[in-house]
Length: 116
Image 1: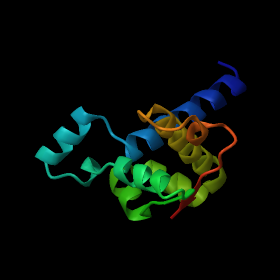
Image 2 (image 1 turned 120 degrees about the horizontal axis):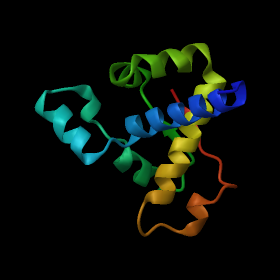
Image 3 (image 1 turned 30 degrees about the vertical axis):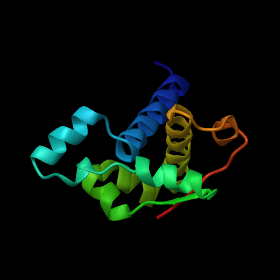
């Protein structure tokens, strides 16, 4: 694998981790709830509320990121540009997958900001 291909794979991995944090699958949430793990939380309701209010900023607790995935939290602290972009892309992916939402919300031109 060349350097560019490894870089692309790392970017996709960060986006996947951010998506799993923001909106874990139903199976994952069920499993985490059974064992009383903090990773059971989903930000889907917060994302929908943000969209309904016309806001463009989603506030995420860094401690919750750390509880979910230490590597993800460390990346936000030490390489914030790369990891913030992964969260931005993950949020766009989640918004575009929401049913019954206006097309303008999932447009590539829409900028959303994370607050930590």
